[in-house]
Length: 80
Image 1 (cartoon, rainbow, N blue to C red):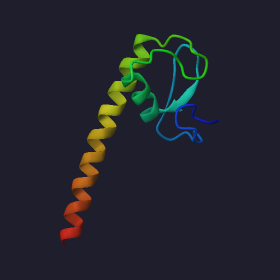
Image 2: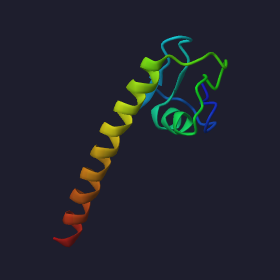
Image 3: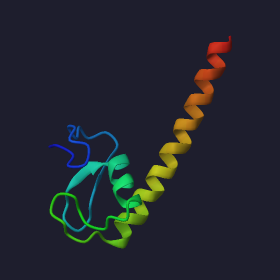
Image 4: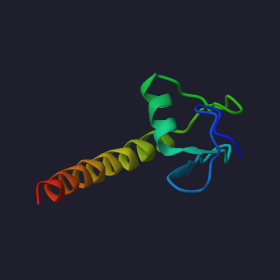
């Protein structure tokens, strides 16, 4: 399956399946889609549920927290 936002293969890692239409996209792509005030599925244009929007926002916040932790760890490793 191809992500309709970034046009890359959706391989199962860091993906989200919309509740209403069951289309699967990259979590980060979907977060950016929602941040651009898009409220429909990029595949079928079905209106996204509020739950989809809130869940993907929570997932992306957790992911970005983990990314910043990883960056700081790798920076400290370089100084050793």
